[in-house]
Image (cartoon, rainbow, N blue to C red):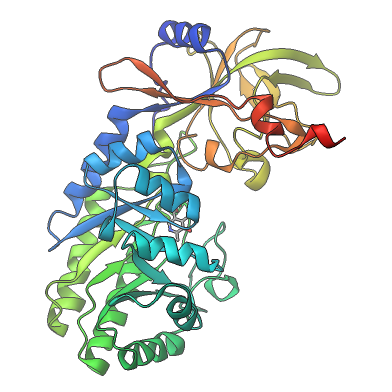
Length: 417
Ligand SMILES: *Cc1c(COP(=O)(O)O)cnc(C)c1O
């Protein structure tokens, strides 16, 4: 069972809320660093290992900088994400550009930064050539199509997914690359999301290692890296277990020995581009209860909304909720916990058993460190919250201010009315 802990004790949290105002996401620097160290240790056996943090999960430069200090790179899928990586000083193979349906300008920026380019389709080779010129290393994103037990709920069956090249296209892509003078290759895939089954995670590694071995056999090419993608799950529910990274690393090592070494592939670098697992459990959304409403159900209205955390509304996802100061009180009240959007699915929890809640209580929504703030939007003119960092030394720093009405109206010109 995973334990749902607060970022700090309730009293301290109330002080932070009084100082900065709510709502806010708060992230724990220490916990993020420790997670990066666990992952790197689990793969320390590999000839080279690099986690490219999926920037979209938590696109804040302070977080990317912390992860860079722990040896991580950045996985970027848009111009803004490339610029964020650049702003923290990254370049070259510290950045992986994994885009799909991208405009030419994004390829130009990726090439300017010297990023590793991971192509999503065979037609993108000529598109890239025209837009930004060809690099000497190309990575291809593989989509295996129909595979037994492949894919999972969030990402769906690979054959239905818009991502990646088929096997035949990938082989053809390599032939085209060779004829265009490209000599260095990488392989990538991402076929699961929020996956906690070690078996499924290892199946991905097995599939990719077999692919690398057959490319070696066909073309005598040593792929330089295999990127296992992101998608490692986290325990959103208290009764769920986290993925045992050490066992995962060990399992990948066994496959490496079984499939790559006999194919005479000795120096293949292992890469990953996890987002959720790196920061998800180490972020919390802290809100104040504005209203209590009693109709056919009991509603708790917060000062945050799905503009700050969309996962429950979007996927029906569970996020654990704690009421500050009532951690040990019995959960004997059933509530819908809502935001303020004019959207009936703007609910953080439905029929959730919680301690009795009063107006003014502080509620903490857990596991918001990935795909939380990042998915925010401005529907209804709702403004996104601030982000705070609980630093390793125990102090708190604001790493993004809350949006203001001026931000919201910045794209309008009222003077022409
Ligand atoms: C979203 C995404 C990731 C990160 O996924 P997580 O579930 O956050 O680990 C990695 N790579 C690609 C290409 C993605 O689209």
